[in-house]
Amino acid sequence: MEPSTPHAGAPNELAGLSELATFTDLATRRRTSLLIDRNRSVPDELVTRLCRLATWAPNHKRTWPWRFAVLTGDSRIRLGELVAQQLVDEGVTDQAKLDKARGKYLRAPTIVIVGARPHHDDPELDVENLHATAAGVQNFLLGATAAGLASFWGSGAPLRADSVKELCGFDTEDRLVALIYLGWPSGAVEPPQRPDPDVVFVDS
Ligand SMILES: Cc1cc2nc3c(=O)[nH]c(=O)nc-3n(C[C@H](O)[C@H](O)[C@H](O)COP(=O)(O)O)c2cc1C
Image (cartoon, rainbow, N blue to C red):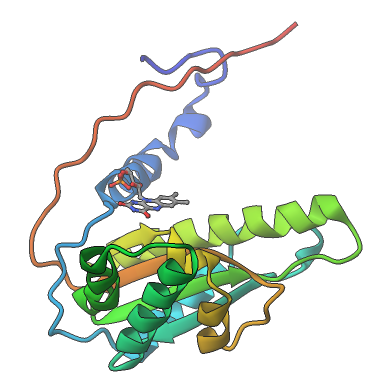
């Protein structure tokens, strides 16, 4: 879809378009990818910078709801055991599925789990804490792309498990928003095509 022109005519408004093109390139290069070199570690300092970048997401009432846990080494095996147990608790008996869960988190050298604190006083802010945290996750992923890292936002059973919160040092009342596989890319993933967004301009 061609960009609409009603608001984009003045030269000073067009001056930022080159920066927008640079940012668009970054945002469209970010891919959900598990083509990760599992044997090459990511420096703690780099992961910490990405967590700090996440905190620049918009956050209504500045509640700073996000929490981060960085799992490396054998903690990824512990995570797999906990997720397999979660699946058992949920009634899964398929041994292949349980074995897969156990080995899953060794596919990347670093797993970052992102949680959101609840808001006790206001149900709207409680939901907005989740929104802010999800926005923070996107900051994290874009920063990872800029740093040349591959990343993958996973969800499912790990995010339902209280035992995972405990492993991360989070509180039971926190909610898990993302499990991010992080590492150096070992290959490239084809971008899924995006349908054009429906955009409605209303001016009267
Ligand atoms: C909240 C959320 C949860 C996701 N959970 C999973 C998941 O569990 N497994 C998976 O394969 N991808 C998951 N994804 C990634 C999407 O599959 C991916 O973003 C989508 O296929 C588009 O690909 P792209 O990110 O490379 O553009 C998740 C994305 C979001 C935002």
